[in-house]
Image (cartoon, rainbow, N blue to C red; front, side):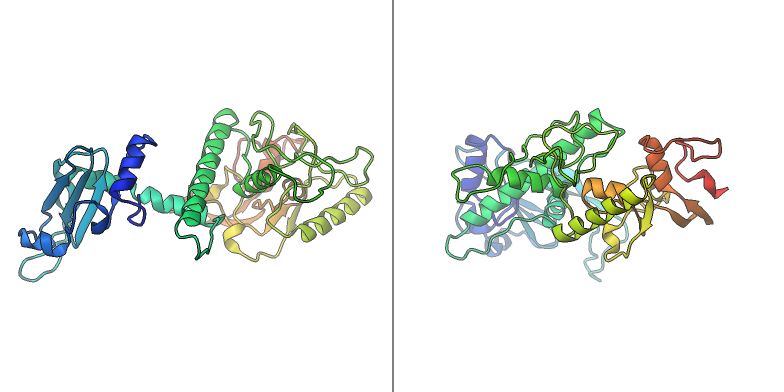
Length: 376
């Protein structure tokens, strides 16, 4: 829990009402134990850098306030720990008392038990904030205090947790298929939530997409608004996916108008060229961070980099991009693999694996290889 929200009242509500164990940094004036600042701690003989501890426990509540003298006074509050000291619980580079320089080697130091638990889990807060930041629901209200900001924060956390559960379940039961990205999931959820409550205007025909996805069949955002069976423009559906509900124009990371123009142009080319099937086409890359290959077996994951990720690509699958409503990047160029220039054809490997291409000759791309056999 971040120090902005942590207090003795929050600990009691979390334990008694929400049944949640909480631990986090806390401001001194929010502990309910009076003034326990630096002056009080220093008066007790604890100096910064000595890694000594002072702990206060509530008389009749399971709340413990601990002060640990690290590089600064680290103050934590917990509703499920006692005043327990963990011997050699954390490693630190100690300072020389004469030169005041840090040692090169780590040394085991004592710390409160709740401090050790906080250090084991607080990095997950940063990861959660990073995943939520792209789709953050924020408010700049200056008239209602903390309430709107806290409500938005809880909504963001719930949204991120729900998407992580969806991905885990989908990957468990469909390891050979790719789950929806977070953006189309948010678009469908937003559409569904906006249809609830009393009507404020007259909207067009069609049912709202369901916020609950059937993970046995749904792999895209193609459900919601009805389209007539005799309409000229019909949505594209992958031959390997079974879509429930009524078709809907897929959500896109690009603007709706640009997507509509690209789909119209693709339909015209499809009519003139009936054999135009899942072609690899180049695009101008505006943001390299958004153009990584979507193939889960891309050899970029095997480069040994500290952060494993696919190769960036300048090519997209034309038809898959139209179906998914966003650019579907797949490698189809020369990469340096183990110091050798190699043709990496994730585009062909992906479509063969999904059975969207038919192998008609022994020299065709094999399903079992990541790098295309065309490299030979």
